[in-house]
Length: 164
Image (tube, rainbow, N blue to C red):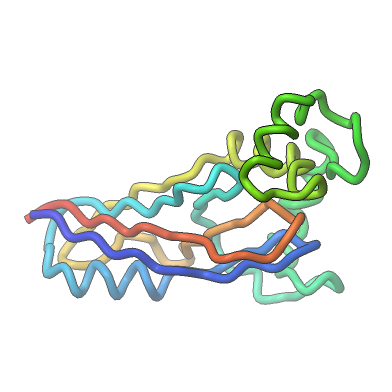
C-alpha cells in the first residue's frame, strides 16, 4: 500500500528557514494505517533539504534553535553566503538569461550557496515505520530546511508512506 500527502510551507526571505514537520509526518503515518514499512519525506526544491535532528530547546539570538544555528555556521564555513556577485561561478550569463525568461530577478539568481547546501544535505529522508509509527527514536524530529534567502515563497513537502 502507498499513501502520499503534500504539505505547503512558507519560507522567510533573508534568513534560512527551518520547519519542524515532525507532527505532519506522524499524522501522515497514522492516516495511512500502515503498520510496517517506510515513510519518505522529500521536497522537489533544489535549494531545500529534509533532515532529521533533535530539538535543541535553546534559542540563538538569530531566532534559530542553537543546534540549527551551529549547523548554519558550520555550512557557512565550507559554503559562504552568496552576498555579492562572483563568489561562485554560478550563475553565469546563460543561467541569468534563462532566469529572466522565467520572471526571476537578478537577486533570485544569486542563490548558489542554497543549491550547494541542499546538494550536500539531501532533499529526502526515509524513516522506518514500526507498529504504525515513524521510528524517530526518543529525540528525533524531521525538518524541512529552506536555504534560499533571496525571497519568501511557498515550499512543497511530500510525505510518502509505503508498507502494509
